[in-house]
View 1 (cartoon, rainbow, N blue to C red):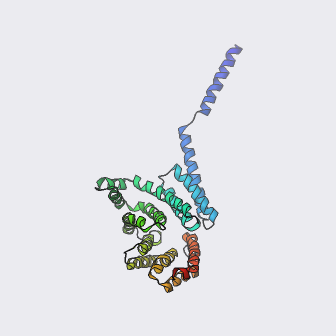
View 2 (cartoon, rainbow, N blue to C red):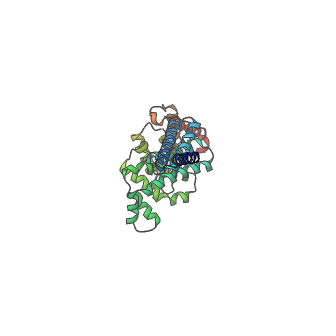
View 3 (cartoon, rainbow, N blue to C red):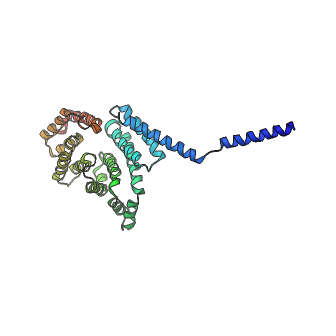
Amino acid sequence: MKKYIANSILSILLIITSCSTRKDPFNKYISKEKNIQFLIDQGLSHWEKRVNIKDAKMSRLFLSKANNLNPFNAEIVELFARSCHFVGYYIESNPTNSDSLFIEGMNSTWSFIISTDAYQEGVALAEGDSTEKMIAGISNTSKEIVPMLYWWVSNYSRFLAKKPVMERLKSRDIIETVLHKILSLEPDFFYHGANRMFGGIYARLPGVELSLSENNFDKAIEGSPDYLGTYVIRAEYLYTKSGNRKSFVKDLQMVLNADPTILPNISPENLFEQEKAEVLLLKESTLFQ
């Protein structure tokens, strides 16, 4: 009898142990979602303090992990690509490391873009080579994809900025398609960023009338006069190419004298733009020899 009771107790304990150690797929899903939300919250927390270099890098790190776990969450992808651009452009001094960051931002947004039904429909209806299909897919995207398009082209443009002119020319059609799409859907996105990029691109491409660059910079400044980066890019690319030293100094001095906190959401960007303006002014004599 005692042996029977002992065996019964042992059986019950084995059943309980088996039940307690069995993996519940639903709990696993909840754990993953909680982990992703934790990473997002940490990324956002550090992002709000991105004026501090350490916080900017930590934000990108947390968002990178969140993006790896859920690469099709629009909120994560957009902010991750933006953080890659921020660290690559404002903080990282090594060009190779900056390029790696820009590529990360490009890849995350591009994966999201090509996964959308609108992009796939555009590609399916297009004829021609891969570039023409790519252009057709981009042209068919809708307004909710504008943030992805913008941070893709922002990272791509930064990646190409120091590359040979032939490499930049090869990408012209794709970049122009994206920028025109943004202008057609949401022209004021990120402080008229599409016009700002057109201004910088047209200032540097050979054979392009500088008036195209001037007009786009004017539109960006008219629409978002307190975004200091537009003046810095205009000084660095347009005025150095046209040899307009007086306007170069005027734009950069204006940036240095401006209140960087007038747009609270981008005051860190404006503060870093003031640093860039200061560096460019120190190079004035070399740039206008």
